Length: 223
Image: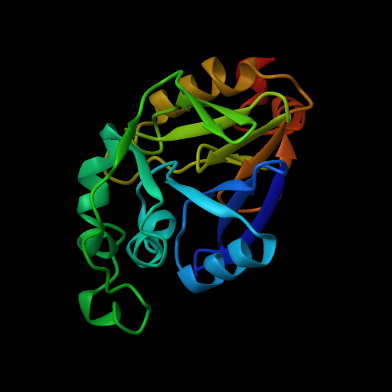
């Protein structure tokens, strides 16, 4: 599997391009910004973008969707229905995290309403990217419609903001629930093998086993 990472925005969010080595089909997970850089990577690697695949709809994960869709109109946008209200509310999201409106232009947070969702994720669905097959796991808590994408054969799971190295996602924004988040981690992520690599939306790559043993938010609950 081809994995290219571009870290964008003041939130240091990891946008990732995943591609099939054989077919050169690709997806972009969570384009937060810098659509031109994403396209440059696609062209450099000879990849065809089939999907703009969103783990959830917070502004740092979807801020670049509109620009990328304009550059790659054939790419289909995937999002869970539970986050659509947040996705369509992107222009007002800076207010949700307490940023004064007069500061939005200087911070690059003047967003247009993003284009319509093409396909809605469903829990347990299989999503093919060439010879890659991702299992979509609905993991609410950080947001109502958060999903993670698990590629079993590659031993990799792309978790957005559900789980981080040594931490978990915040739950104090609209639609957040600590109880749901911990349930999602326990019942979905912690059922995966210890050697599965965890690619989070922020911070370093980790593994399920490392977080099971050392994550202070999890170890005393799940071991």
